[in-house]
Length: 161
Ligand code: SME
Image 1: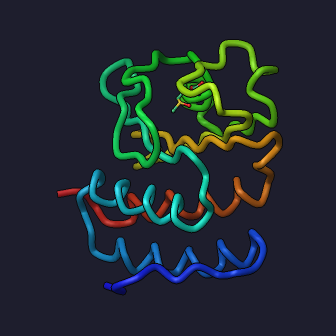
Image 2 (image 1 turned 30 degrees about the horizontal axis):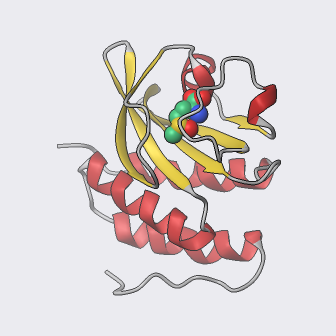
């Protein structure tokens, strides 16, 4: 494992291009989902400086707070509620350019202005969501969606034991 995360100085595309292979090698052979989520959240927060990056895991009929970087957050979210519960229900990534314009947005932190939530799938089932909050409006776009979907797929690449 690399001792330090390398962070590209350039634009978002360059940062993702530098980050993806490092996360892949960091997670290589790791079968524990929580360990993978913890390092992925840290690597994303270090690279992009977003103020909240973390996972909610599907446990029963709720999302339960998992590994994250940032300030304290709500611990449980119901199916279909908030941006996280909506991404879980729709089984697809949800990009919210302005959280105030998203009906039912759950405000864990008043500094949040925009958000992206990416489902984590394993064997066709959603096992968690990756939630990222920015203090700027309109931070996330299709490039984030594409790169983050690729990244979370690394979490379940090795069969859990
Ligand atoms: N805003 C999220 C809740 C989680 S926090 O942002 C960490 C939502 O609406 O689901």
